[in-house]
Length: 280
Figure 1 (cartoon, rainbow, N blue to C red):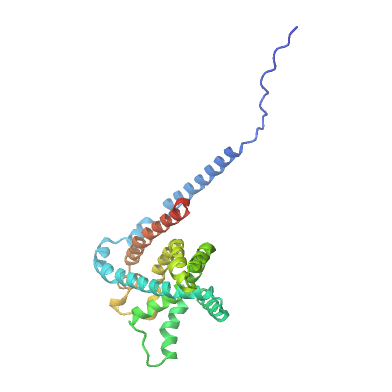
Figure 2 (cartoon, rainbow, N blue to C red):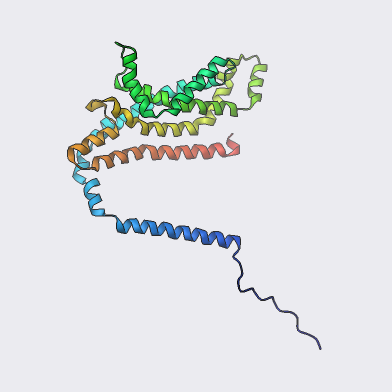
């Protein structure tokens, strides 16, 4: 008598999920928790009071065009001036940090640790109060614009110096050796060969630093400014105090996003391009 061929093995009752199924289950739980949190916020928030305090259409109309022609313009000027000073000073500090002369290295390390370790607010107070006390009778050129540029530049230079140092060290050592073998002096090789390549490497983090400076420019309010020197945060706070409504602050925040969001997209595009092997 011939026995029937064995059938497929019965599946165990407690079959464990595969790795892919577990990942899907965890992802589904995360989505559910997120959806529940969003729904809870939407249901529990008092949207009527929020709209009354932050979305008064008649107040929005009163902010223009001054918020663009004065507040946003000043914010951009403060940011660009501080970035320019930080760019130049940061490159100098980075070269000092890489110098073979020990005192230069020590001075660069002290500068970087000092200005990276202190809050930017304290640097602004130092520039606005300590400098005039230390040097009586002297004025920082440019008035408030010069003070903001100096404060932002000193802080930005400490971060940019480390960015530049990483970029210079990322350039292959053979580039410098090849330039020296062609008769270039060390300074000329750095200026003509190494630094241009380093700039290409550090463009994404430098752009990110520009975004941070744009937000840090709000610290200008601690220096004391005139009506024509106000930036977005100061402008929004003043109008909010005058109208007893927070709509101006919300509009100022939207103006910040109109600049920072496109800059953030630029940073991501630059980082993606730098990550592609063919673009190196």
